[in-house]
Image (cartoon, rainbow, N blue to C red):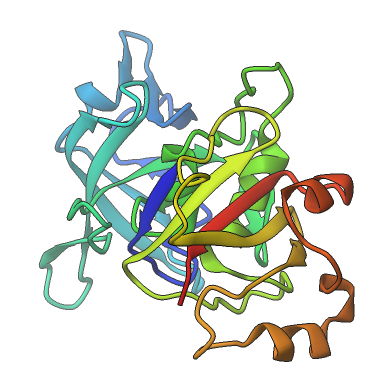
Length: 262
């Protein structure tokens, strides 16, 4: 399916060791929802609007975060989009934690797991916040829930990892993006979560096949003014050679992208 990218290089991700201010049951994450269990009740995100909690700020301190609103995502109503604000410790002012995505939404959600550099680790005992403007949240909206299963029953964790590279055009899997805000890409995968809709459109061409650690093969780079295909192949010869959907699939690609000709 064709997707419009409004892209941060990676997207907000704060590995959390949270503690909600009042309830003694603590704060957990189920799917894309916060859950608080107390002796008297079990509360989920929709019940927690206005709640303030603390997360690791990644600098050895704690940041206060407030849930301002919760709404179902139009892409999938089971995904809960949270409007999240962070408190400035100096001024006390609250500001939205997320940049606008391609649809203008400033929203995010919690997910179980954490990040080892640019690699997602499926750890059920930790969680992080993902904004829809970044690859971490965007890939869930595209259907690659790292804790979910594809229509054919296979786990989606590696598809989620692969999607991170795909969104950012991180061909070598080294954390370096090669794309621009507003770029359209047509995404498909071997599990049937996404399917191409540009196959009959001559304005599109095959870009690359992708795996969890980067591209499998590259037929064309997304923005040659950022990185040419020749320069990429010179630096990473393993990404060269014949590259179309069939060749990429044979080499183990999970996701395929088509891009507009430039």
